[in-house]
Image (cartoon, rainbow, N blue to C red; front, side, top):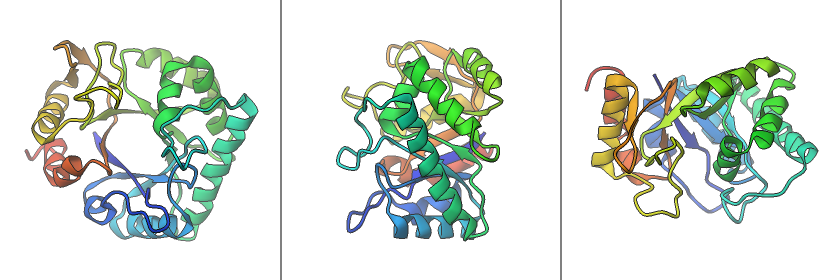
Length: 244
């Protein structure tokens, strides 16, 4: 199981996350593309940091929602959403090439990620947009009990998937992430480490109501804007490397 983190989310004078502290301990960096966060200088610096630490970069595109940090759904047409995704991915891919790096995957951000998981139409547009990119890229999406359905959808598009679980987020009984508007949606250190240990032990998580769910997980996410997660990143690295 790999370890990934959403990074490069500062914008102008606004500083978000602790990228320098996180990057040495992760395998994959999901880098904001400028539509919900990130600016050209931040993107450039984040890619340089990934290159320094041998971390694989991925594009972290979003709805065009800087004011709401990409956490608000937007009623885009299929063509608008597809073009928006390709634009963001291509921008990050081009900047990565300047550092001798290649974007390996795409992980949608925030509301777009949630909409992709809940709405088959949005998911189809996202999959088709990535599959139509000029070279192969994988799509990172949430590991849920519907993973076989998602594999079949991706196979029809000729697309590879990376299934991710979350170290620092609480799950509902259907395997979805509990809304950030709900109390307890983001775990503190103790519950976070317990969730990581459980995933490492038997590939399962325990929902907020005590239900145990088995998940097919390729990569584990710790959010760069969650200070508890960032502070525990070295311990999480040790756990998933079998050293904890």
